Length: 334
Image (cartoon, rainbow, N blue to C red; front, top):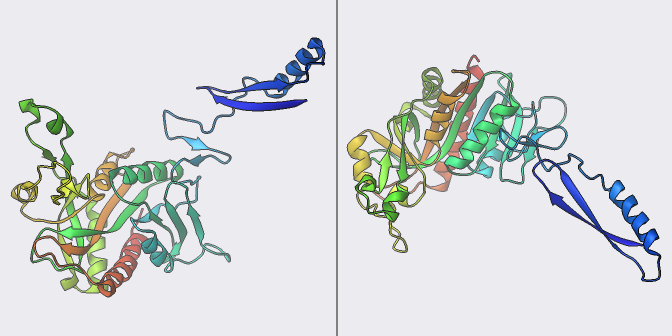
């Protein structure tokens, strides 16, 4: 007897269809009996889906792990430094101490997230690399919230472009508010006056005031006041079009975008892709006040002058700035 089993996923259960291949000389009754036995063994109607909770925050496996971070309850701390780059996460993980006599907790998910958890300043703290963009920040905050009990505090350490000529590359800028620039997709596919503007610029979303002040203070102590800037952040939904970069291969209509941003927010100093989402979701988290957020970014490139930071200056800002943010988090009362 030879048989092949195919799995067909239905909304509520797994159906396993069994096909038989038998010799022509075997009696029909025997073939029917074998088919009945194999279908019984295949557990028709068994509830064994690839994940559960598809209309909420799905989990997979036992214990249930959120789909993208790959974490289960308790594996990520209430205090989190969130970064975009795996090497930055690895750098900051060197400042963590193991929670026990073993090694640091480390988990790399198959969706690009990397989590370290340990102790810093006597408090449990995690460093998580999430990649780039609004969607990755959304995945991170929602799934982290699902596996953490109690209040949370999240501080972003990223990189950015500077919008002001006077802001030095290599410095760290702290966002006292963030606005979102989005490509107006309807504008490019419609002649309606309602879609006249190619880009939309939101109102400001604010960080947690206490955490933000602690971040500024810790950075100034660690790096010096001349190395720390405060001002408005601009978050964009693209590295290219929504940040005013010229790409001759696409119709982006963004030649006046930066000037429009600065017209609305003259004190805007940084532009990147994650901070607004962090602030917005922290303020939207329920119960209100249960997630606190702040953001600091290393100024990598000055857009007006074209200057780009050197490797040594970048590593110094990441290392010293990162330690300062971890200190601010550890000292924060949750």
